[in-house]
Image (tube, rainbow over all chains, first blue to last red; front, side, top):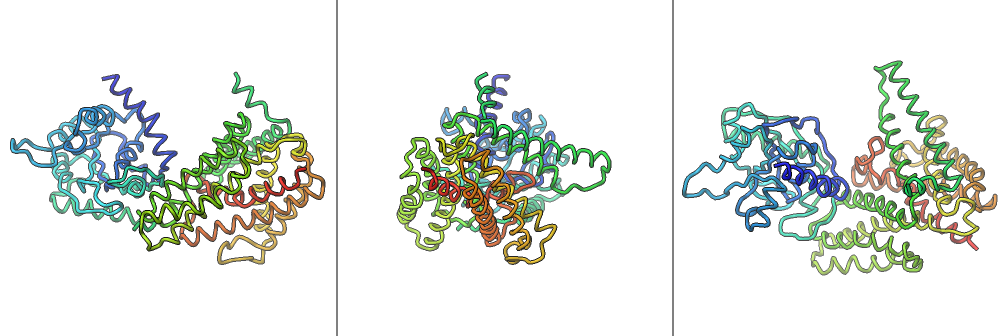
Length: 215
Length: 317
């Protein structure tokens, strides 16, 4: 347990922070909106593997062990080495993207984590998709918000990670990343409406950045 | 122990200059602190973060210039990298450009490596000739023709200023011999830095107090003829008095150095302003609170470094 926490802190101090703060470079807006403690959900648009590292580095080292990226089990648990890295170093919560026949609740891991007061990172698009484009949102966060009406959901807009390391590219190119954190949103009573609101929040945050063309 | 020894190994005039600059920042901080105590309501604008950032910059330089000449190359390389990244993030880019941009980044360590092995001929033509030829080759292999010329030229422009131009400052620090004056290469760097940044400040102050006739209002509404002339004279006077301390220049050579730095620094500042206007951004970044990005701070240096280096190199026997 202590070893695990130490591993995470070292990984952050020696690899994630230098990478996100010096090599990539972050312009953060609305950092004061971020939660000081869980339970909470961070909902961001998703373009790159770097997104998670960026979001994690917004939080102090002592909070790293309670920041849990929710990630696809079929991708991040592919082999033993990757599974070890994903769960032990990144601290992911693996989730089944395809519904299993056994019928267990795919969100049970997330529910447990929120009950423990952890902070979840969820990408409502469900996949990295095309670089620097936002695709349709899935309803997962709304399900969780309904179960935890007291937990805030923070809309976050990220721009630049998709230029630095888009899906399907192995070469990393340094680019500044813009990150805008919005005011938290709470369960509103209707799943589709909640997802819509979240989407429009993130769209509104994107207008705060002067986005450079990226064809 | 060795580190402390190195940190105090600055040549005397350079050490003295650092002490004076640290003292000025200290006085400024005391003033800000006193103002806050007397009148907590008063809005100091971006003066406190600006001062703090100045302190970090000067402390960074203090270490960068003191350490071993080989290690100090890493410091210059880091600033070059941050500036290049700001530039490449500021311009429009395409997904098709990624491979070419990767090669552009690779040229940065190479450029500083040429300085390290003192291969002057390659240092001076590597980016203007070889990278100029190589970047379009890499982009042609991607096979996207739309926006081709724009991509290649903007990337080359970034390399020329942030890597090629700025690396001259690093090379200046490595000049040695009697000609450099009592403080050696780091004295020349100090001389250039003090005059370039001092010229920016002097132009600002003269412009604020006497400025009436705007030179190019469309690009920078704060630049006035009075500010420019005031800055020019102030810088030449400083160049004259600092010359014997930091360099081996004769009186006339020092005066001309002042003239060169003041006029080129002015245009470096304006050119970067024009680019920012073109890209419709106010600052190139947020890396230096109160100043903007790294590129905002070193804009004049991108012009003065190569020119001052070649001036000195030409005068060297």
